[in-house]
Amino acid sequence: MRRRRILSRTIVLGGFSVLAAICSGLSLKTGLQEILSKLIRYSKYMPAEKIYVHLDRSLYAAGEDIWFSSYIINTYEPKAGAFSEIIYVELLDSKSQLIDRKIVHVADGIAAGDFKLSDQLADGNYTIRAYTNYLKNFGESWFFQKSIAIHSTKENEPASQENQTAPKINLQFFPEGGTFLPGIENRIALKATNENGEDVAVKGKIIDSDKKFVTSFESIHAGMGMIKLIPKPNSSYTAIIKTVVDSIMYPLPKVDEEGFNLRVTDLGKTIKVAVVTTSKRLIDRDVYLIIQSNGTPHFSARGTLANGSLVTYVKKELFPSGVAQVTMLDEFLIPQCERLVFVNHFDSPKISISFNKDSYQKREKIVVNGTVTNLKGHPVAGHFSMSVFDSDKIKDMEEYPSTIESTFLLTADLKGIIHNPGYYLKDTLQSTKYHLDLLMMTHGWRRFTWKNVLNDSLPQLSFIPEKGLSLSGKVGRPGSKKKNQYSGVKILTPDGYLIMVKTDDLGEF
Image 1 (cartoon, rainbow, N blue to C red):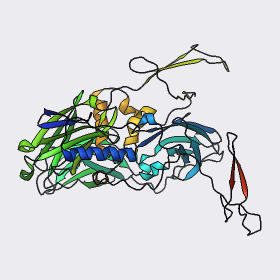
Image 2 (image 1 turned 180 degrees about the vertical axis):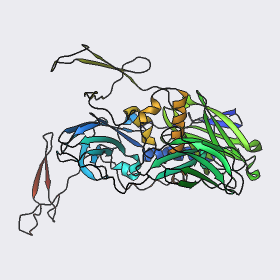
Image 3 (image 1 turned 30 degrees about the horizontal axis):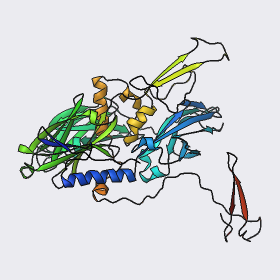
Image 4 (image 1 turned 90 degrees about the vertical axis):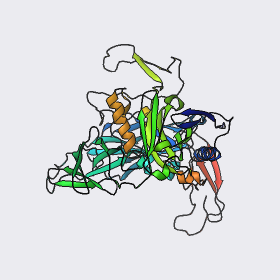
């Protein structure tokens, strides 16, 4: 595994002394250099794994087969191969109850399998979930999940219309950077979902603690929207939305007495990062900036809050495509604000498919030619899978479903359910970019905590990466309590190997 080195080339940009992490040479500020080293060490110890499962389609009938191909990468060093070599792929019903589980072995980053569906399955929506034993250290938020539909062959009873009530709305507010400061304009993203986690369109108004109208708001895409607000000190704010039943009130986050405000703006080839404080105590103090992707720092800087603010511009070319995390630390190197941004260089391999004819007769042989190239048109080696189905009869449940690109670059780094993930990478329109930025502000990125990094505490893994399947058992005789000590056990593997083991003094192996 190659070693990463930290660069320190110092330039002055908008009040920042920029310390870009490129290669070792000059000296960084000791504290900041130490943090970067700790971050790299932590990420190397606990690299992020990302899984994508390619299904042959998204609509099935009870009794059919679900065929799948799984792809897994280690994001810290993708070329080093997968961290885990066993993937668990599960089929869950609408109540998240396990129906079936497949354990597949990874070879060269891929694994394949299938589910044989029972012909007794009920009509409804189901979920395909995939994870490794290692991923359980981070919680189910990082598992791959995709919804599918299964149609029952049995007649379904009509759903009861009794006791139906208006859906509950969960409305959340996310101040940019995580702080809500008085006296300056704050950008606050909002996200509205129903009790099933589905996006909900909302609109309403904001009132202050004196019940005076402040501003109105409205979601603009997938239950998300933006509010710009200048809060007053010692005041609180409440959002009110009206439903068909009544009005519902939601408190906005508490206004901080003092602190920092972090604002990030996408300017095309660069991102603008602005830090502001309203506290006289914090004026002319140093702050630090670290921008990293998948635990690898690509940019770091220090600067002074001259007159309470500073601005810097960072080139996107420093970062790989995907989600980047901007973290601002105070003079004591304690993280105070965070913000996600998405960088897209559109450098994913390009796939071209052609056929030998425009139309075919029933059961006629189809010849498919495919090429995969990089941006320079050079061939790209890899593993690929293709599904063929009647698109007139089978439609995906989402207009812009997940792809391996949207999964590895976007959704695998975000918590929560992302509907129509392919939408955010479909084009370069300003409206799409704006909706993507709202997604960054409303879905927190917490693959690690800075506290663990700064304390240089490498947590004990509760679930270790699996490099193969483990098999254990006990040998006995029917109706007898006698232990078969030191008995020989022969195990035949699917690829034809014969393994010989012996039981221990308890008859176990």
